[in-house]
Image (tube, rainbow, N blue to C red):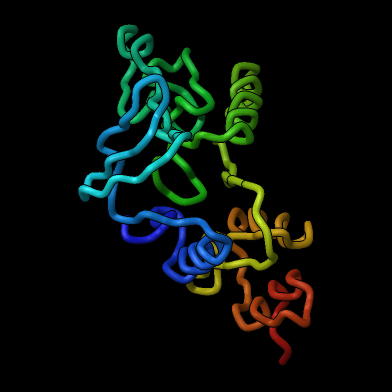
Length: 211
């Protein structure tokens, strides 16, 4: 990609992190991939897809995962990017449920299919499946989130028609972290002007405007 975390962040947020790390001596190699690792007993260099060779003595690979769907597929369940389930987490066999990283479910909050690789989502879906098996026919409704250790403190909010659609909260008070999924799930109106006012608590952004 031509910027870091392009799939997750806006250009402004990507630019912040790029600047944060480059000013601390990190070299970010964009729009290229590792084509070859060279060395005998240990790695000595990495050859990139653009022809560059970078000397190194340690390589960390973050290559993602693929859902294990062979058992489900061989059992006649519909699969795609994971095991396909409905909003109740039922597979195409109504007696079989799927939860966690492998479940490609119908997200009723955002109105789209998604598959989430995160422990919080796996726990929530597992609990939901248990309730469903006990007769509670309620659609799964959950706002997924991700976290990582980072420095500095700020938040970014994405709104559409005065409704929060996503948020990036970094080292901010718990009220902001807790408000984000609440506002996304409830679709209540939020004032962008108040949200941008750092002198006021974030929760005041959902209050009605003064007459």
